[in-house]
Length: 239
Image (tube, rainbow, N blue to C red; front, side, top):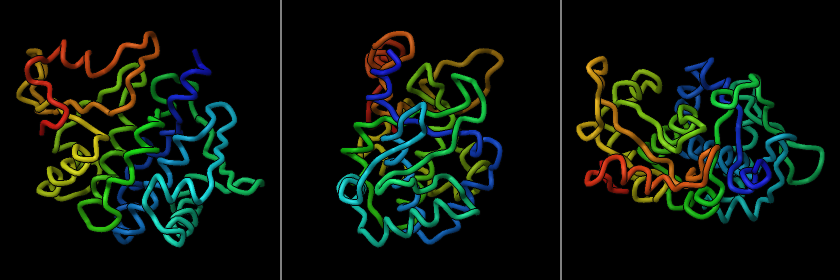
């Protein structure tokens, strides 16, 4: 089971992201092109990583194909990811090898985040590599991965929480999410269709991370799960 999951998903330690809200803001503080390249390279390398060794082997050619970035942009992004302001990975001893941070906590739900390998490999290049909205789209996607429970391929978060955690303009969230929907990386159940208990007055959407369809305990598909739970309101491009 673990071996099969390792072929479907990569992982990254999410401890730094939970501990340091400023990490997202530092990424957003870079130029749009640099921020986009950083997140794309981090996600691609994470998707190819081995869960135990934290090693990933990927060539520039593979990264160019999957991210749509140029070689100079990838090189700069890797330098930034290694920089002490971010410190998210290091280049390995072997050529085209990278080492991600080890999991800080021995917790199956919160010590690490899953990264879907197939969508990152095949769909990430659909996200434009320039512009403020594309930069925001990539950081929102990264944030959603860090809050997604590893038992289910969904995350529940409100616009207000995104503004609070990422320090972004609320008006830019919807167009950024549209990029993720159109790239088939994310789909959504609008808040008005999400059932609430008497103790829950939130207005949070539910986001389905495409590709995180195998749960820890079975191999049911998230699309069926969401359709059964929210039909007829589930639509992969709803927003």
